[in-house]
Structures are given as C-alpha cells and as structure tokens.
Amino acid sequence: MAKNYTDRGKTWELANSWWILLTFPPIGMTSFIAFLYTGIKVKNQRWRIYGFIYLAVFILVLVLSDPDIVAGIALVLWIVSIVHAFKIRPAYLVQLDVLKSHENELINQEVSKLRQEAEAKFGGVNRLQTQPPQPKRDNRPEIDTSSQVIPQIQPGVTEHKEVKKININLAPEAEIAAIPEIGIILAKKAVVKRQEIGGFQSFEQFAQIMGLQEHTFEKVKPRLVFSEGENNKEQVTSGRVIDF
Image (cartoon, rainbow, N blue to C red; front, side, top):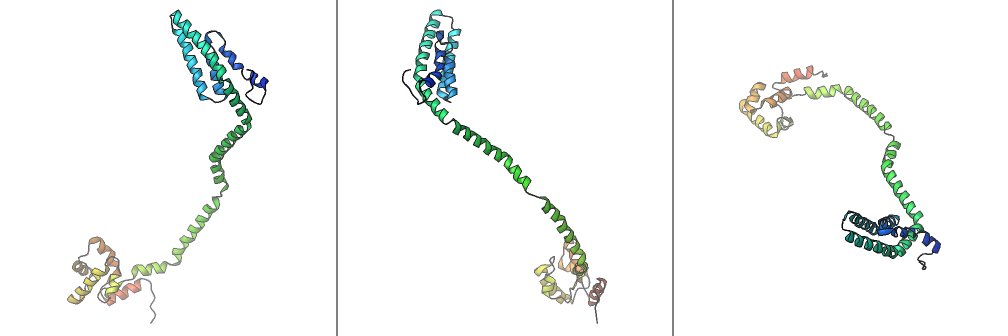
C-alpha cells in the first residue's frame, strides 16, 4: 500500500481502503460485503456482481455436508477474495477520487434534472393559470345577443322571400330553373308542356304532367301560381304595398 494512486495523500487512501478488512475473517464469510460496498460506492456494476458471486459461494459452503469439500471451497474463497480485494483497490481509489472531484457537478446535474422534470410537470399548469379565458367567454354572449337581434330587423325580407312566387305559365325558363327543386331539366320540360297544352290550369295538373315526387311536390307548391290574378292575390297577402 506504499504507492499513492491519487493526489489526496496516503492517509486518505488508507482511510478509504478499510473495506479490505472485510475479507480477512475466516473462510471469507464477509468478503461479499466488501465487494458490494465498493460497487455501490462508485457505482460499479461488475464489483456488485462479484459480491453476489462470493455470497452464493459462501451459502454453498454452508449447505454442503462433506467436510473435506467444505474446507477446500472455504479456503479457496478466503484466499481469492483477499487477493481480489487488493487487486481492485487501485481502481476503486481512482474512481472514488474522480467521483469526489465531480461530486458538486453531479449534484448540480441531478438538481437541474429534477428542476426540468418539475417545470415539465407544473409549467403547463402555470401557463394555463396565467392565461385569462374569462374575457373571451364574456364576449361570446354579447356576440350571440347581437346576432339574435338581427333577424328582428329584417322580418319583412324573410317573409318576402317565402311568399315570392312565379307564374308557371308566364315565367321564362331561367326563372323556373332558379327554383332548387325544379332545376334546368324540369324547367325545360315545363316550358315545352305548357306550350303543348296551352298552359297549366292547376298545381295538381302541373305535378302530374311533370311527374313530381311527393317530397318535391310539397316544396314546390308554395312557390308557383297559375294565373295572373292568383299571383296578384299572393302579393297582397304577403304584406307588400303596391303604389299606383
């Protein structure tokens, strides 16, 4: 042990080599503790494995019943563990020296890691708490209220669109085709048929000749008239005022 392996001095190296004494008790009964300690102290996985191997051999010695075999294994275990301990001592002292030198840095790294994990966990909550969602929620009802007032300002326009009708016997093809339920194809057919029969007399006649389905029948009926007098009547009942 005369040789120094670190710059910390012989006293420090001897003080941190006390674990070698654990290999001296008879038959190496505590040798496994020495290797487990060194492996844990400097985070060396291999030395921890050696500790478990020595522990397994020691248990095997206790289990065996043949005195000669037990004595032989115990003696080998004892000698090997002592030699092994002195062999790993230089590496242990160097690793311990490096670990001590960077101890503050390692602590700072662990603290920084913990801080990052905490920020990742609670940082999102803090950001959500700093954002004021209330003003947006307060503004939405105001927008809805104003939008509810708009239909009240234009009731006449809505009624005018609902009661506006066309004279199927006088309207041009394009005007008839503008009705979504009729379209251009039925509009062409309607113009041809009214020329053939001299005009439609009723909606039932129009629907039968055009072959309208029941659902189309109900949608188209409020939008058509079949005489000029009926058209004028619908315009008066719709609430429109005609100035002469």
